[in-house]
Image (cartoon, rainbow, N blue to C red):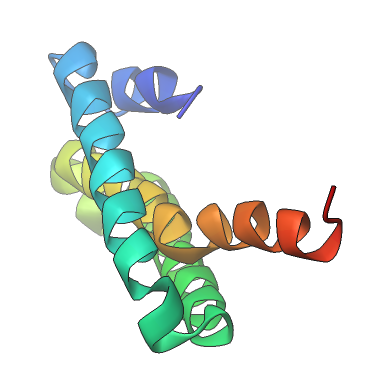
Length: 107
C-alpha cells in the first residue's frame, strides 16, 4: 500500500492516485469479505488461500516488469498484480492474526 504509487509510476500508469484508490478499495472489500467468512470457512483455509493468492500476484507483478514479451502490458499487469496482492492479503493474512491475538492473550 505504501509503495503502490511508486510501482504504478515505474509501470507508466498515468493516474497513480486513481490506481492507489483502487488498491484501497480492494483492501476494504477484502476485509469485509474476510469478516463474513472467518467463522464459516475457518482461519486455516483463509490463511492458505491468502498466502497462495499473495504469491501468485507477486509472481504476476514481477513477470510484468521482467519479461520483455509483457512490456506493452506492464502497466495494467502491475496494477492488477498489486490489487490482487492487497485483496489476497486482506482476505486472510491481515485479519486472521488481528483476530487471533486477542483470543490468545485475553485481557
